[in-house]
Picture: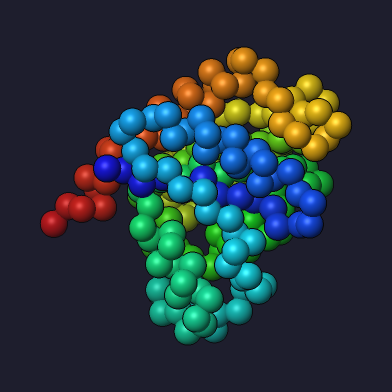
Length: 187
């Protein structure tokens, strides 16, 4: 079975990111051909990048990096749930990605974003970042409006077409994850 992580993109107190990730998980777990897991980066307490060597070498010295590495290495693909902060992703999400390299390689990814304009610019930046760590990202994405897909900016209330777009994206993440698994397991 494929394993797909749904990764939160915010750690701030009173965040709605976790609620959005839980919604993604509730839709994703209906897929019968994969195991989905919610991975909350807040649970890993990653400091600002503090490894003495570049992640491309894979020689991690910090215990928190080794734990994060083991978690991410276990997955075949990812769904990143990110708010848009100042036309980009959060610093904490960028930092979590920057800690590792090979653990991300040759895996698939999809995106769920939210913000005043649906978080579209955050996804644009995330696509560039993930390309550098060799993650293949699918075209379909789910972009939620703080004004139309949330109640009082607190609880999520996605419109029906958002659920369709999420399922379309998940389907492709799984398809690509399966294809890329053959690359990672070749002799």
